[in-house]
Each structure stands twice: as C-alpha cells, then as structure tokens.
Image 1 (tube, rainbow, N blue to C red):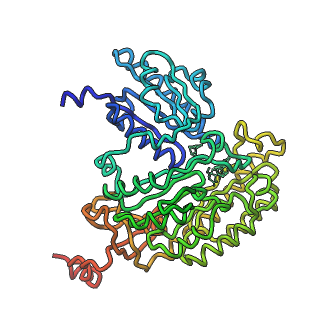
Image 2: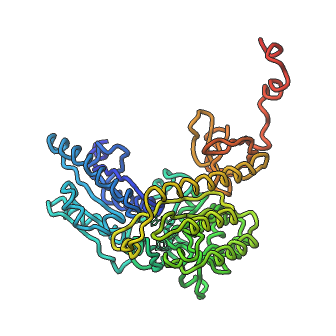
Image 3: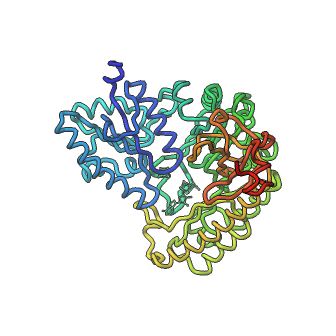
Length: 472
Ligand code: SAH
Ligand code: SF4
Ligand code: F3S
C-alpha cells in the first residue's frame, strides 16, 4: 500500500456542459498516467482543478466563490506543511486567462480547453513556483495526444459514456462565448473516433453519446475513402458490438443534413431523442442572434425529422429577453413551443457576455420582464414534459439499467426517450437492457416493473384479499 499512499491526489470539480465532463475524464486519465489518483474529497487533494464554464455570468462567478473556499483550504494545508496546487481549466480559463490569477492569487495554473495535453508539463512548471498560464489554441488535437483511459477506468465510469468528436464553433451567435472559448470548429478523424468507440464497447459501455458544440457539423474522411458527415459516421458506429445505444448532442438546426435524418429512420441503435436548440420563435430575434435560420425553417426541419422517425422526442434550448425582444416576439416563441411539443427543454434569461456583439446593445430587456417570461415559458415546457411522460404510463419500453437507485432494492435506467425510470430489481441487472412496464409517474422519473418477470408470490393475493384475510 505504501506506493499508493505516495501517490498524489487530484480533485476535479466540473461545471458547464457534457464536453467539460468528458474533458475532466480525459484530464483524470492523463494525470493518472502521471501518477495521480483521483479523489472525491477536496480536502485531501494535492491538486484541485476547477473545470469551468463561461456561458452565463452566474456560471463564471461561481468559480470565484469556489476559489475563495479553496484559498482557506490551501492555507490550512500549508500550515501543516502540505502543498496544494490549484488550477482553473475550461472556458473561464480561456476567456479570462492571466486575469484569473490576478483576481484570485490562490491559482497556480490556468489552462484553456485546447491545452490539456500540456497539463503534466504545466504542473511541473507551477510546482517549481512559477505560475503557469496556457490559453493558446494548439495546432495538435488534444485528444490524439492525451493518453486513453484504461479498461478499468472506463468500467468504473459505468455503462454510458461520452465521446467528443467535434469541438469549437464557427457559428458566432451574437449572444454566445463558445466560439471564443473553444475556438474554431475542429472534427476528430473518423478512424480515431471509431477506435475509441470500439475500445469503449470492449470495456462494457452500452450507450455512447457523441459530443460536439455543433456535433452535426462533424465531417471527415471516411474509412471507405469517401467524405463523411455525422450520418455516415453513425452507420459505422452502429456496427460496433456492445454499443446498443447511440446519441449525439448538441446539434445545430443548420447542420441537420439528409443523411443524418435518414439515419434516424434506419438505425435502431440511434435513440429517438434529439436535442435541437432553436433559442427563439421570432424571426427578427433569430436574425439578430445570427442563427441563420427562421422559425419556419426550424418547423419544416422538425417535420422532416418526424417523417423519418415518427416517435422521436425533441428538446431545445431557449433564451428569453434577448436584447430588444418584444412581448409579441416572446409570444412567438411560446407558439413555436406549442407547435413543436417538446419532451424537455432548457431555458435561460439572456446574460450579456463580455466580447460578444449582443452585449453591446442598448436595448436590454428588464430583469422583471425576463423573469416573468422565463416563468411562463418554463410552465409551458413543464406541462409538455409531464404530458410526454404520462403517455409512457401503461406502455412497455426497453430500459438500459445504469446505476443503483436511491431506495434500496431499486435500480435506475433510461428509456430510449431519455426518461429516467426507477425499477425494483437487483444491481446484477445494471449494464443490461430489459423490458419494463411503466406503471407510474413521479416528479423526476417514471416508475416501472420488469415486464415478463414472475410476480412476487404475495403480490396477487395481497391485491385481492382484505387486510383481515391476510393477517397471520
Ligand atoms: N452549441 C449549442 C449551445 C451551446 S450553449 C447550440 O448552438 O445550440 C447552451 C445554451 O446556453 C444555448 O443553447 C443557449 O440557449 C444558452 N446560452 C448561450 N449563451 C447565452 C447567454 N449569453 N445568455 C443566456 N443563455 C445563453
Ligand atoms: Fe454558441 Fe451559437 Fe455556436 Fe451554439 S451555435 S455554440 S449557441 S455560437
Ligand atoms: Fe460552458 Fe464552455 Fe460548455 S462555456 S457550456 S463549458 S463549452
């Protein structure tokens, strides 16, 4: 055990989107190769990394309050002779760079999302007392340089996995920081993706979610000598044994090409759930956002997708109170939501971000109006979500069992439509896909029972008998 005790411990806190979750895993893998073990307890860590998000002001500000707490911890550790290193990675690191260390001197290193392959070197630099700041957009692709997870590491993460296939954004929506924090659109090579997917499948992963800021902008040279888009890639991924479920996120409406839509009709492994953010239902606002599509384009696209896969569940992101948004324009968004009918949606008040064109506008919508609009929009979406989930009650669906439930004797899984389901069953079923009869609707999940399973001996009797008859 002595060797393990000498190992340094890293604690990573992850904010923001799934791509940060994936990046944190890859940093964990890279640091493992460098002798670090990961810990869930921040107070015992030798290295604390905050993998941050810059998308809205609140997200970015959280980092500084967390750094305040970490400073106290670092000082305590120093008093007992232990050096703790503190790093900020992710989109705040990219956006603010050296400014972070000026504002929070507790920070030893700042590393932007395109430089994680340099982490071991930067850590050595910082350990020698020189603050390390790296926010260059490197030429080489980090994922082809970072060490891969071992089979054991992958297994420990469960039966669902993320795989980043595309990073960065060239769309420049006028409200958004991502093109600045993640850089230009880059697609990973098809061969590297297929290899990693194969490795994940071999390690027991059953559901793979492909990630990209604009995941459906992915393109590359196929292994058949032709050029591929995401549709073609999905056909190949669907052939990999073990990977029974494929998903991808986040897609941009402008990059939904015919091959990708057709894949939804053709591939049983491609799950019938699509996150397709529209942001607004008003054409003037969509134009001001530089989305480069109108509300009709979006509705026609939804029709085409539903023609290919009639049962597909859709979700979206919405921004309320984009500068200049009138009451009528907000109502147009409400109408679009009514027309589409969503299974889920994420909605936000517009947050002005430094360096983005929309932040310079002088027609900001008031906080009170934004709050009122957000509340109404969220109530509509919640009603649609409940209606969608209620439809499932009484049906039998395939559920991938992912983890133990909160209650003893329960396990949690997901339907093809991404609904969480709690099922009374033993943990040995985790990692399998089973038929589940959906019999109830909770606040955050559905309840179900294994279909075709033998009823417990006492169940039918208890239902028919009175309490007196069953009393011993
Ligand atoms: N690439 C994805 C979205 C990434 S950001 C896409 O194009 O759809 C996730 C969501 O955050 C966005 O869809 C948007 O709804 C929201 N968002 C981004 N910038 C924002 C801002 N400045 N204020 C409020 N919400 C914002
Ligand atoms: Fe941001 Fe628009 Fe790019 Fe999405 S498409 S990441 S919202 S700039
Ligand atoms: Fe946030 Fe960066 Fe993702 S800003 S949403 S962590 S791409």
